[in-house]
Image (tube, rainbow, N blue to C red):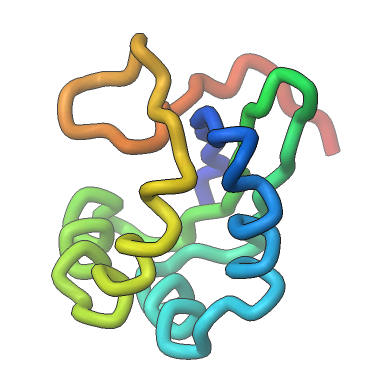
Length: 109
């Protein structure tokens, strides 16, 4: 299992919409997340900086392949047409990233 964190900005005028979307997340999208070996997935909001922090635990063997499968899923692609316009990707993100992946520097259990 691999713990993963990521960040992205959120447009202030889209915060309520983003919360509404996630309060009613589509079952097909939730299934795809599960099928992509992601567990314990949470998204946190920090205001007034308007940042989102996502955390999940990846339980698969090939993260890139699982993410490629997720990206091919038509219902997930449709979901992203609603969520992506709410977000403001960080200027420092890597090529091809929507959310900026973070490096884990500490863990205790």
